[in-house]
Length: 195
Image: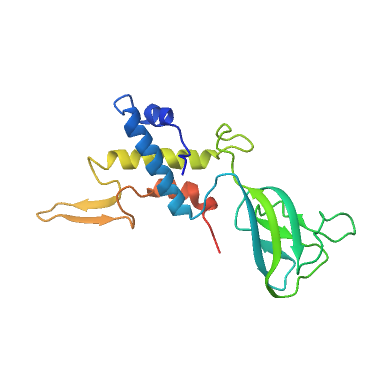
């Protein structure tokens, strides 16, 4: 796994006391924590997948945002073309970045009967918040997660409340040390895998 953030970014966020080795560890750990929490890889890739049809005119692809579609076939038929005016085919939904529609066609229920070859994800070599690069919200979530992991040595960033009236009482967020902190989770919500 390649870290989604550079060591120079970690050092600029946390200060010059962080060594380049620590920064690389923090970049890797923050990326792994975010990746685990959203339950999907955002890195640009090519995917050859099959889906069950559910009797509707659409499917939800596993990876998004969709960059290109190479081929789509239903029930082993010849590959579909992009839908055109009054012609059947497939179309990508502009409002739901992972939805592929089949205008004018209801796909009968079937098991593994829709084959799609496509590319999806973000190009991690492009600048943050560019058209194809890592989204700014994910970048900020990586920053918050790296800071939480770094500061965990001094205090637990997942402690939500504490009471020391004679006996320690603490409440913790439902995460562990090194996990994605609540502020980062809210930024990542729209990137999280949903069924």
